[in-house]
Length: 262
Image (cartoon, rainbow, N blue to C red; front, side):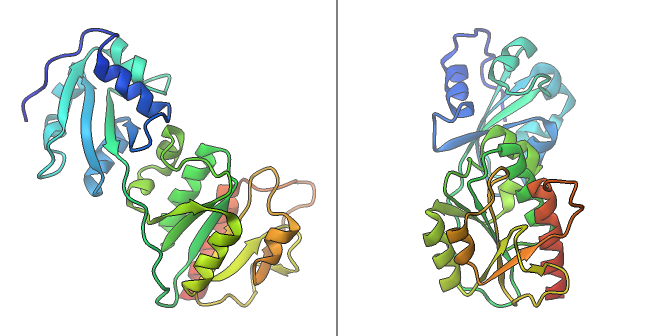
């Protein structure tokens, strides 16, 4: 694939467009930064629209223009200083890609022995991305979002997911009780994670297709939201520790759900 014309000006309209995508002002696209994440795109069906890379990066990675057979994105060379103007990270790794957001997945009826996770009001995109990575590691069938949950394609969420967001089945964001009802209709049994749960997650009787519901890092789930679940499981921890990071808690529960499925 031949290189497009080199970008040499900060006022270039293509760079301005990338900034709009990066800042969440373009709801149809998202940005991917860094070598590892860029090449992770090759293991997904994500559509790449444009790539902005330093000449050093292009020279070092010959296959940059052949990431995936059939792709027809444009590859724009530019300087390190210009790349830094569209990067969200302090130390850019030589490449920024603009990609088309994938469509949300349809929620199909559980085939039995599946697990899904619903994230409610998560405000930290780094934590959200880490949970998505954990969910893929433990083979969660679906990841749902409700309330004021942040964008799974926020640049920080994409980085923290380490590419898992490219491959996971994401369910479109809904109001909390509607989301729980939709998963229930699909055959999933809602299980809320909360320190007030009567049963420890370990040794509890897990349903064959659990929906693990996790609330925000700061506030968790309120009483009415907990009542929407069939079960409330807690993770016993040292009482001197207020709480676990949500990605750690998600890993514990998803691991136990996987163990029970096997």
